[in-house]
Image (cartoon, rainbow, N blue to C red; front, side, top):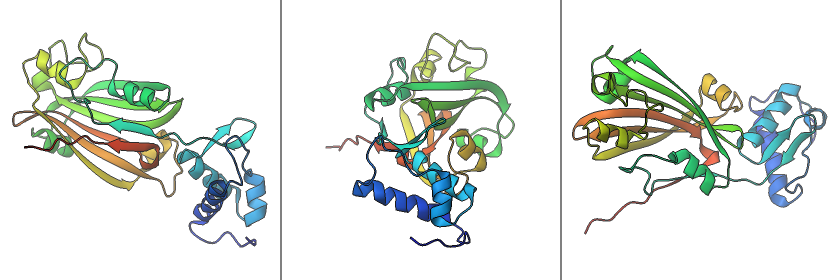
Length: 254
């Protein structure tokens, strides 16, 4: 491709597409070093930020990995498989579902979390069917596969149900997992509803998931646990779509 001025609004996407196609043709094999920022700047006549964004797209897609001080290399593309089979169970969630997903996909799992008492926002109140401003326990998570962040989630539970009980702190009691914890306080979860949508990543999401700030999209699962008509937990789960495979086992009634 001949050099052109760095004027197109999505020039980094075109560069990423060229490299992706070269990988597909076998010009770059797993373990090969990809052209660096300086090479891409000269080859395409673009600014360093554009070259950097192009390589970031390939890393985001799982096609490449950065090795500090050495460059960006082609890697085998391993998606995380989020399998619904037996995901929601009455037993204590040990190991946590994310750990199982990662292990089944040959990734090393890790996560961090923070739980805080909050007042329900308008959206959280709507999800849980409570009044705006009612106290909830919010738990924010970030999940890692092989050391890279791959998923964010925020969970909310009404403190009118869990406050002052042994399961008030979702990750610190002797019982873990939403269903098992709710069973422990007499709230029998009988269904889980998930709604999956796609949208552009927010600036904060892109930063925390180490995605390119331009052109990154995420899948979002809006999840609610119900005990009868009562929503006992609501959660937003956010992850890069091309790092995940969603698998659902759907029973067919007689």
